[in-house]
Image 1 (cartoon, helix red, strand yellow):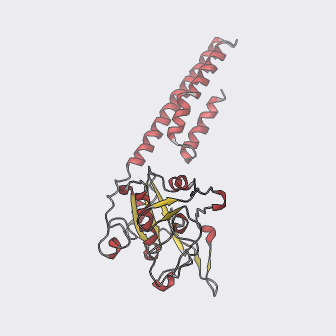
Image 2 (cartoon, helix red, strand yellow):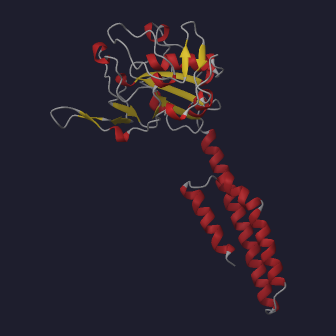
Image 3 (cartoon, rainbow, N blue to C red):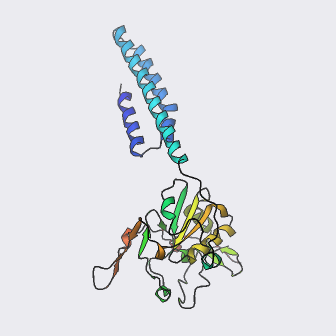
Length: 284
């Protein structure tokens, strides 16, 4: 009879999102039916009154039917929710310098990205550093990560590959260890045995990938790197620069309450890369 209490708990986990309907269905398609069968066998081998046996068995069968129906409904609803997300427009370069120099997308950019947030088929990556050594204030930006769009996770592009082609006013960005080296001719060489695995974990190939940075440059360069290493160009969107975002999902990091601004970096979902734990590729 304990199973009658287990099922409501399982259903509750689906309600709250702790367990996906598909995972719950798996539970009911193998372990629970076996448990039900064992319970029926145990009841049949005990010596209560025949009517009590009938009631117990009928109760278990009724519980099986109810939970199967409920989970079928939730599974159908889950698939409906996913299918309700409209198809994404194919990546298309914006007109002018935004497209030709930064590879920012025409259809999904700072002004429209809010419409495409929270998709289960997509990941969202902001490519800035918490504090970039480059002088981005010289071009009207912010060297600090002053805020981000809700749902984006921060993966610093300068840790992925050496930064090139910055505006002269900005100077140099980070020049430390990187996962890859760009030889300047569009070829990327892995510097660590784990480089590609890390890249695939942070930018999964089976998802749509939304890229953003401060002004669009890091995001455009990251898109180029991914495509060069085998990612599907039709699944990667450079949505532009946070500096130009005016939507409803802004998460401010810069705190201006004091005389000198401070930055609440604890808010940032940040992916650091500890190069000391990686294994360098031998170049003999």
